[in-house]
Length: 200
Image (cartoon, rainbow, N blue to C red; front, side):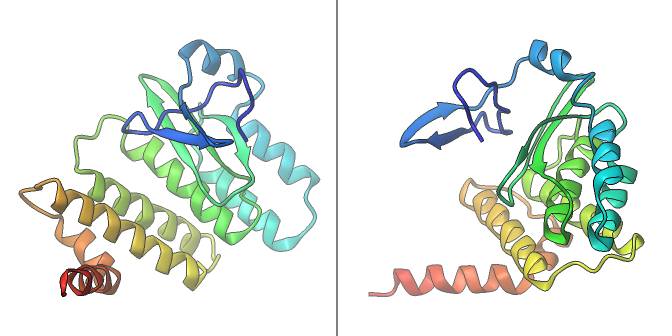
């Protein structure tokens, strides 16, 4: 949740998020990450939450998150929505995510961890990076024996399909084959809707 004076993370494109009907630039300073590094270390926060949690699935989800978060990552905030954001600037790694106590929240948390682990110095196309983050989350949950909800997988396919569509609209010379195959039906449906909208 955004509060006045609280730094926010900028997305890859220097994004803008609407708060209370007005646009606010999403920014986080290096000084802010340094100031929260000790108190907001992701592993420390996850361990503390794991110690307090009693439910079986919540404990399994937290343990999976704890095992896959980068060691020096910090949590800027725990979101109340099923959305996330990752920031990597040099050696600074930060993320916003829902607390990974449910399967869907864990999937989002792992997706953001993938960006911190795999894409700090990546020049891969955005749709490829998003596909890799989806695959990372799926693989880590499978390794922990936690099934990925079908609704979450459908959303992941639609998200990668949207990133492919954006790349095509911006004139991409090539689309990653693995990402295209993953998006599959979601991409086909999206393209079909666009064609229907063009028909008089």
